[in-house]
Amino acid sequence: MRYLHTMIRVRDLPTAIHFFCEGLGLTEVRRRDHEQGRYTLVFLGERGEGDSPQLELTHNWDQKDPYTVGRNFGHVAYEVDDIYAACQRFIAAGYTISRPPRDGRMAFIRSPDLVSVELLQRGAALAPAEPWTTMPNVGEW
Image 1 (cartoon, rainbow, N blue to C red):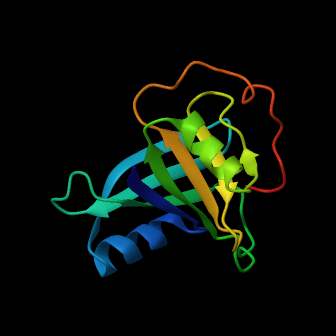
Image 2: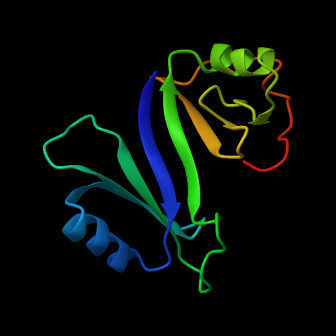
């Protein structure tokens, strides 16, 4: 398992980038604009650290009002060797999978304190398999 990133939502992307890059010393690693969803993802990392955890800034283009407390923080993400096995471990421990890995690539669960945790399959997505492909989303994630 490897810790990947923490996501926060920002209303003013240039100001947030200035804060984290100039103030904290992070560097923009990559950026993705999603026209259809109307948002931009910017990943920031440490200078000279090729494989360190990153901070994901999510900028929803149409967000005008400040985020309510808790809505600006999104999730923590971990890469796992086998997403199906990881999800099964959580189920066996009594936790609910909020967003099942129907695609063999991504799932979400929530911690006891309701922190969203994203699980991402290391490498290529696994072949879709039951019970995951037909399992519905549960609650928020």
